Length: 179
Image (cartoon, rainbow, N blue to C red; front, side, top):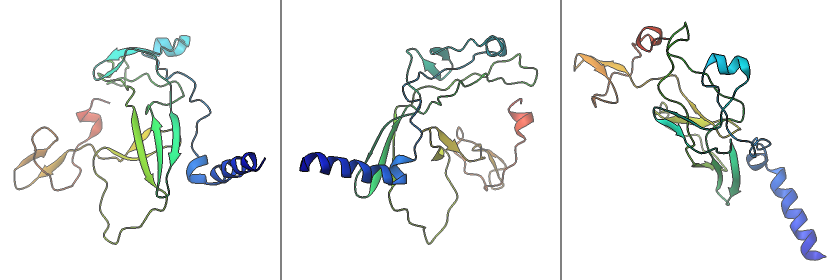
């Protein structure tokens, strides 16, 4: 009886910690789904496998967070990085005739989040890549796109040319990215 009481109390203690209990896991047993086109969206034809550009999902995979664990200093989340709501469709143009070249795919990530975050004395901007995570385990990104003009080089910097820009946004997404 003491063992059962101890297990129950420890379970309640874990549930009481919002760093562990606030994650959205209700749909983690559902497959990730996308609408590939607006026609599919209108007809309600979502698919659980897809192949487009870098986003290949050859087998159905579950959406969202699948495991939450913790230590004294960290909370660990295991996630596919795919949302449980039906995603898509994605297009490159306003007329929605040119499909976006890349779809999302299972990233199979483990996020490590400090149980007690510290505010750094020296502030810095976010880097490229994920800047945080939503409660469903999907990554969030800042508004930069890795392009900045470099006065010293006289050209745009980009991930491809290895030039660091002056950290001044100078691209019009509508013109440069077609939408």
